[in-house]
Amino acid sequence: MIHSRIVGTGSHLPEKILTNFDLEKMVDTTDEWIRTRTGIERRHIAADGETTVDLAEHAARRACEAAGIKPTDVDFIAFGTTTPDLVFPNCGTLLQERLGCRGVPAFSVETACAGFMYALSIADKYVRCGDSKRALVVGAETLSRITDWSDRSTAILFADGAGAVVLAPSEEAGIVSTHLHSDGFYKDLLYCGSGVSKGFGEGKPLLSISMAGSEVFKVAVTTLGKAVDEALGVNGLGRGDIDWLVPHQANIRIIQAMARKLDLPLERVVITVQDHGNTSAASVPMALDVAVRDGRIKRGDLLLLEAFGGGFTWGSALIRY
Ligand code: UT7
Image (cartoon, rainbow, N blue to C red; front, side, top):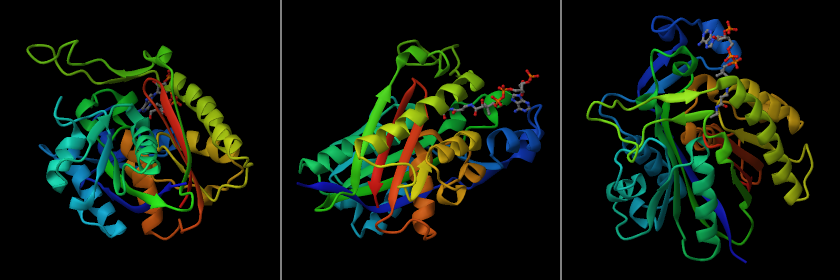
């Protein structure tokens, strides 16, 4: 039986930092409100002309380097994003051209903040069935492009960044299980109203993210709680068996609720929301990379990754790192 295992991680943040104090000058808000309600202190914003694939390329090269492979060795690219550079070619293919791994399958999945979890789950299956030996999985976003910077309810949350992992075959379980879900009945609670077939441009502006924050919050806590139970239950594990929770970085209060659910002290939770804000599909792979590189996450640790986003879409992965 072949398993897949994470053999390298990488991430990249744009240079420009926007602090809560900067936002105080832009909208009617305070650093205190943002920190206490969300946990966010600062976030990174892409420069003019800097794209999702620009950020992803840096993260992907770092992940390849950590995996000890050349970017041209990559044989499969799954790319989670909701803020693509172009309508097509997809971001996976645009990244492939930069990395030089011509001819291999490359595609994007647009499942909002759960984009990386979906991409990871698909890549895991390709590796396990023997069709990929060096799969690159990316989550990258430039959410600043679809954020209304005059709307205090969303401008304080969203940000830009990219994270990536390389998966390779292994005799021992690395990715133990992945669990994906969606429920389109919640489509009106969190969405970006522009789209190709609905039309934008030519007098119709690109619309920004709309979110019923407190309603999303409540569903996120309940749904992620069930996702955590599912990942543990399927694997016959209990609360307390997890070494590290690597959660979607949307709100510190949601993260704290998941830590309580898992009986984990916050010291065993990778928290980057204070520095990264909510980077949607990029948030989980960036948090993973931070904790791998600073030495907190070690080989053999049992990790639980989870994410929840617009759709709603959500997913979790139990991983023996
Ligand atoms: O990643 C995808 C999934 N997304 C999420 O998981 C996000 C989930 N939601 C959240 O994180 C939180 O709901 C928010 C951080 C967005 C909002 O926090 P909240 O505690 O749910 O606040 P609220 O929306 O209920 O608003 C409370 C008050 C309101 O004022 P009133 O009606 O009580 O007078 C808002 O107008 O806070 C006000 N408010 C603000 N005040 C200062 C809303 N935004 C701000 C702001 N600064 N930026």
